[in-house]
Length: 251
Image (cartoon, rainbow, N blue to C red; front, side, top):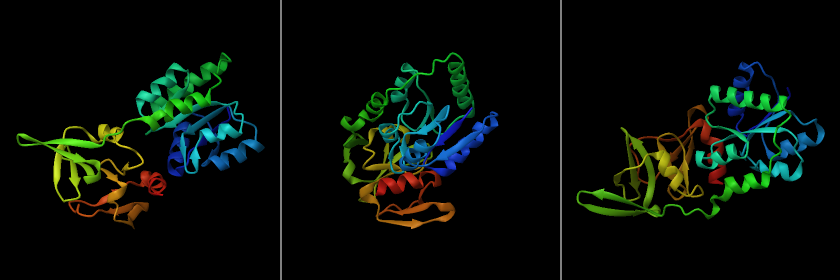
C-alpha cells in the first residue's frame, strides 16, 4: 500500500508516520505545503491513501485539488470541531481529530482496507467539503461577555480583553485595565465562540487576542513568549506545536 502524509507541521507529520508504521504500514512520502504537493503529484504516481491536513502553511489543502485531479482515498487529519466533522461521516469520508489517537487511526485504516477490497472507495466532492468546513465565514462570533460580580452583571466587550486563561479549574478574563473576571465556560467552549482572526489559543492555558500582543520573544525549546500589556501572573508561552500556526495567524 502506497501512503503519503500532507501536513505542514513536520513534528506532527513524523509523529503520525511513527503511529502508522506501528500498524505495520510504510509511509512513502511526506509533503508539507500546497506548492510542494502540487509539484509532487504532477510527477509521481498517485498513492493509495493520503493523510491530509486541511490547513497548510501556504493555504488550504483544497487548493491542491483545484489544480490536480486526485484519485487517491483520503483520511483527513484536522482540528475542526466535531459538529462539522459529523458531516464527513454522512458523506462516507473519514477523518482523524487532532491530536490523533492510535486506536482511531487503526480503525480508520481498517475501514479503508475494507472499502479497498470491495472497490468502493468513494469519490469526493471537494467543493462540497470545502463549503461544509469553511462555511464559518458567515458565523456570528461573540462580541461581549457578561460576568457576575456579586449581585450585578458586568459586560466586557472583546476589545477590552487582554487574555483569557484557565487556573485551578476556573476560566478567567483578564482585561486591559488589569482586572480578572471569573467566567462560566471552559477555554474549549470559548475558543469556538471567538473569531479565529482575532483570537488564538496559544496553549492549554491561554487564549490571546491579536490587539493585546505587545511583544514576541524567542523562548526555550523552539517556543515563543508573549508579552502582554498588564498580565504578569504567569509566563504567556506559545506551545511548541502551536508556533507554526501562531506565526501564520500573527501575519
